[in-house]
Length: 516
Image (cartoon, rainbow, N blue to C red; front, side, top):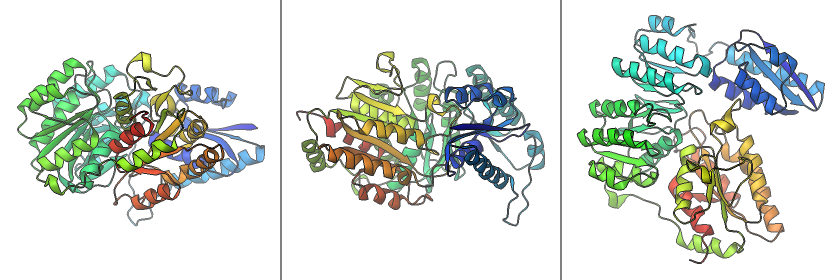
């Protein structure tokens, strides 16, 4: 096996582009593994951990572009570099739409030359992200900061500055927003409507927006806060400002909040804001306090679909006419009869953190041996992320899996490897997975996993056991990946299709419950 690297000095690409380029590079024939990344110390450490660090890479600077390829022969490596160079050239080629594409080297020059611009999307290395976000705010631009690895001190300073200037500071690590009916980064194509969302979760907000769309509603604005906004150190600044922005927005009639439970002192602030709000507020804080939300005048939702239903009903929908897609009880009983007594565990393999959390909380209602790489309680955090324990739920979008690698919604390779491993475990009764559609996501997420799922089911059958796979496709009929096509691929492979994230978690739990 050969490892070769090419260093392109002072060549910058943003992190979103690099994730996409790395995914495509790994699809080049003969490539065992490829990474395209900036030469930061963190990226070098990732390359070292996977055996791809070379002397040239060690000498590279943080402003240099690194291309490293692992293949069986020198010739295959060289062929891969030709293909990667074509990808880079294509990425940098001018637009063919007939309109000349104007590029600016700084945020200040862009703001000066595009006076009507009011929002900047920033996706740069974390070392520089806070600096660029500050420049945008100083130029009176709202900010969506896709970048992560920003210190919590910098996040607080940015959000305080944005609050003082009356601007949105979405992020850092904000992956989803819909502003003025324009989807930004990872988002689904949903109809415009009168329901606004403020969310500290990317896939959680995607799920609620998609379910609202399914039930006939639409989205006015979807404001992301970044995952740390509701920590005590930040104080919920963006969520509070987001609630206020939606309350002031004439197009918004109902507000939905999405997050894991806030820090207690931050929850008090959010509930006080809800109490003052003149518009109905639906609150889906995973594992949150129903009594506290109700006392504040909010509308508590235990799970994602419930949050969407409450929102569309408050917005004027007739609840009696909604197809809520209840759980298929006969299917649950059928699957239980197929599983052997020793097949008692769930393995959740998720690309979306909140979807993972929702399924995990459903399992925790009936089982006390539920483990995860994102468990808050150290007692139930996996000791080794690569080794499952009893009921295990993995968020492959967590930083520990994505440092130096594309997000699993773009490149599912890491999840496929883990799926193959879990499918061989004779104690596994059900494997549950999400497949996320929409802007920024993989062109065919189900298709990428399909060969592994088909082979796993065939192998299990040959061993005399049933392997239950539950697949949930997060998307709408408007998304470019074609929702029906994705669902039909699951069904043709003998995979159980769940109609929502909520139902996926509940089905997985009920399939493996014994003695009911």
